[in-house]
Structure formats: structure tokens, C-alpha cells
Length: 204
Image 1 (cartoon, rainbow, N blue to C red):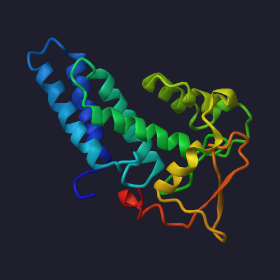
Image 2: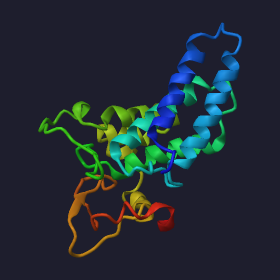
Image 3: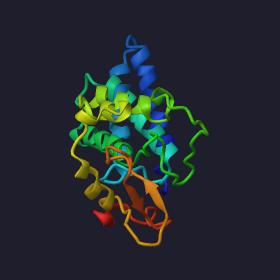
């Protein structure tokens, strides 16, 4: 990680907010452009090409993604780099592919899930996040995943190859995690604890 960490994006979001809130400042356009450039470099450095934040923590992943989206939207008048937009999409794809059937995080790093047995999908952890993904990316599949609308989901096999590229390998003896790309939630991903942490881009 060295000096690249989730706080770098958080700091630039604050910089962007100042420039966005006070456009009357003479240097506001320069501040916005500077923040976008710094954010672009930091975002690409601290996420894998598959869109996973390199601290291997679901919560940090989500925090960086939310900040990156806010910066992208507030700097939209500028030329937001294509690589930046593609990385944001990849980060949402990761959440789409790895969300549990009850729209929770897989338990890696400091991920946590509330003990809530409600059947109200709107209260599940990733519900609002997936809805926002559909708005940001103009793609209905994320909202369909959030609402459980099977007719609008991609084919059942669409997530399997991507999960392998993320470094999660099926085994005969390891623990099973419910997997979201299968519409009925019956599929289970087999994984070895720790394999994801060491994968990085080598598993592509």
C-alpha cells in the first residue's frame, strides 16, 4: 500500500467539496481539476484492474467507491478520464458479483453484517448501493439484483468466470459462501481462506 490508501480519496473529496460549494472563488476550477487528477491516480493505484480496493476490506471498498462516485459527479463538467469511469464500474461489478443472497458483504477483512432477519429487502446492506449503481452506470441489472427481479438479471452463468478472476477458487473441502449471480440463491462458492488477499491482478 505504501502511501496509497483509502484516506487519499477521502481527502480529495473534501477538496472537491470546497471547489464545488464555492464556485465564486477564482481558483475553484483549478482546485477541481487538481483534485480530479489526484483522485484518478489514487483510485487506479489502490484498486485492482478487476475493481477491488487493495486493502481487501469490503467496508473500505465501499467507502472509496462512494467517494470516487461523488467526485466523478461533481467534476462532471471536466473531462473525467475513461479509466476512472471504468474503474468505478468495475468496483460496482465486484459488489454485484459477490453480494450474498440477502445482499450482504462476503466476510473478508473487516467486513461486517448486522444481525437482521427481516425479509424487507430495502433494509439489506447493499440494497441502496445497488440501486445507486444503476443510476450511476445507467444499467438496470444492479437495481434488479437489489429488488430480486429475476427477469432483468443477466444469465445465471454470467458471474462465475469473473469470480474466478477475482482469485476465489472452488475447492472440495473449503467453506461454502452463498453466491449472488444464481437467481435462486442456491449456488455456493467454495473458497480457501486467504486466497483472495494474495491474488491481486495475477489471477486475471
